[in-house]
Length: 362
Length: 271
Image (cartoon, each protein chain N blue to C red):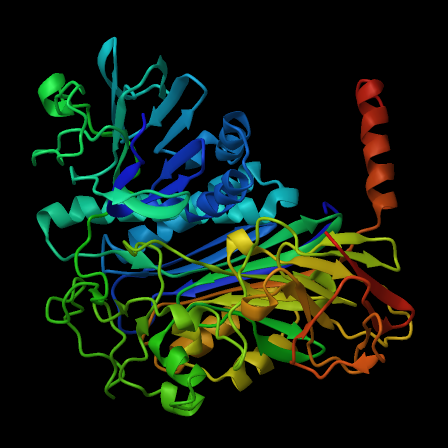
């Protein structure tokens, strides 16, 4: 297992860590974000497996996990993925029998391991630790994929038969509600819900409303998503990472609360969080304000991006009474609403009504 | 969490033009859903019903302390079913798609505080009444909303824009789903409205505000909204769910009732 892991592009996610790699369908974006947090911080296989299963198996119809130990390789496949494991003791085709939770192997001396998710592409791109969209992942010596193996392939490696040639095709998960992986062409083309001409529910009547209208059955379309629309960036600011694996700072509130800045933190008398994705739910910190000096959603603190990467940045969200920032060695300043300011450890934010936030190292 | 008293009402109407009502809704406190299906008979109606079924199922095991996770999970399961359903159809009829919008409101327990978790995919909408004013919470996933955000058209122009029915996100999309979530303190919502575009496309926000402000009973308010949309032309299926936070029921009331029941059972029903 000396060669670098490789992959073929596809629409599954590979969460590749140094020792643990998890493969998930494109629909499992939330899990992917969380798992990357863990693998990036060097979590071991049990921790990763724990997190993977935390949401329950019912929402996890397909996955594959490969963990490299000191001398053994652990492999788990559930649902659609199949894997071919080659070791001195022979080749093994691993797939989960329909009706079982998963198939698991612990193999020592693995020479090569190929996990097929969709299709049968040639794994010719190097998989470095991080996230990749994949259809096939290969560890160790290259396996045959129908095209001649690169010359670099060690001559000693036994030629692996393709899964199909080896034993009966693993049954497709017939009853499973899960064609998560869609080899859908023309991603950007709008989807048409039926054709306007063949209205699936012809009324056979004259519409009561005679003006021009488009919203009868068969007219609504789904266009392609426009990423920039999702989270309109603040002009002049780089888009912040939604969630970072390690908190960039810790906030100590005068009320006693301690909150880590590993994602957006919203502070106020009755803070409201808007337009977030399920995997980046902000921390919402409610502080009492008997004099009503603090606005309902007063202040945002989040991990910085670009030049501010690694530190926390604070933005007054247009509060009525403002926010005063005292950075060590600097004169206290009032935050300009909507303008983010980088915080250094030791900084103190004053929201009014006796509520202060001290910024410390995470 | 358990001591939040909710009153609610719901109404739906096929309208005056369509033959099939592709809207579905769910009232399963503390979970409320409106879904507007697309794809015609045996398409959109099935898709929107699948969403409602998944949230109905969720309501039976719902844990408010894990609200966001639970709601995201129900979305994912509905998405998987709708995509599957579409795939099955496409083998017979290539190019066919079924999809649905969804708006969801659920009470969640955020570190001991009850809050509204709201979620949106598509152009159905969530409004709230706060301090006597109507406010739209959800932001449509639609082409015209993008044009408005980019400053290229006004809201008035959007209402008559030829692409006003093109949505950019929906359940059933093969590219996956990405619902927007919103977390609001309980106290910031006096009344909540979930509705399909058959309501908002037919009557103005001013009329919605007027109905929600003047009709106290949420059942009557939902009814009136849908009837107003139908009266205005009823060009699309119209659905409205209205939820009122009536108040926080005193724990003491529950305690005394529970003790009475407990005493009753101990005494074998002889009280």
